[in-house]
Image 1: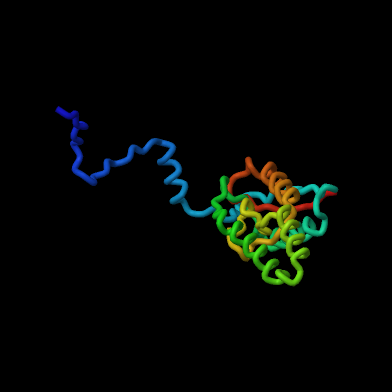
Image 2: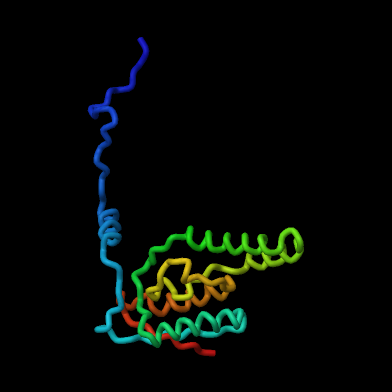
Length: 176
């Protein structure tokens, strides 16, 4: 007599309720929480971003000028970490730029198209208004920035704000 798998006590197609532990509950609660906003009852904190010789200077200055302007307008604050982001936005942004290069220069100047495409490898789509400082995860907030500069500036900011309460107003200062 052939063996049979034991019959389930559940009806076909009836999925059991998933077990929910404390970690899952906390994640769901956090996802359902209201987004963090600037809390002007907290004291403003000045963070210092060091300009390093290894940075792409013009790109660094462009980013810092934009952040200082947002700072002067009272728009920067510590966002809850980890920051929610949609990586498809930055991937699509970079792909569109690469496509524009080839649309403009291919086939009449293949060498230039390939050189520009190769240079794009070292560039990151950067959220000019840092997500960790309350910026939107939107294509209108993206500019290309040299990868090393982008990562290091983000790390400098993160290290200075990580222990601050969410919503803390932030001021930016550049130091040499």
